[in-house]
Image (cartoon, rainbow, N blue to C red; front, side, top):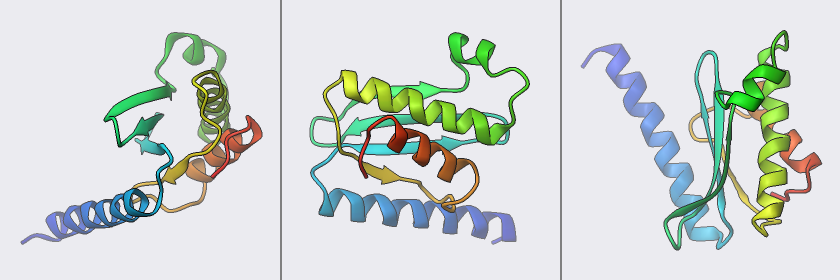
Length: 122
């Protein structure tokens, strides 16, 4: 097995382990983050019903136009605020933060802080 395959397998294992712990402990919706080199997206997922309650992405038309010239961390904070507002409209005030296999720093941390500022509790 090549080192890249080992790295991807380890990353999948970390994310799966974290999601398993979140599902067992909490009956709250899960705030799942997906990050790429250039963009970030987040979904508020109700695992009991298997549906998405709210979502936000840096690829949305209204967001993309207003984030020109911003660095990626500021965009992530704006996305966090946006998903927090959309969660409030959906009637959700508490969520379990699913960072996947990403470390809690940089853009992931900024997204979480933005969601907290919008009124979402982790």
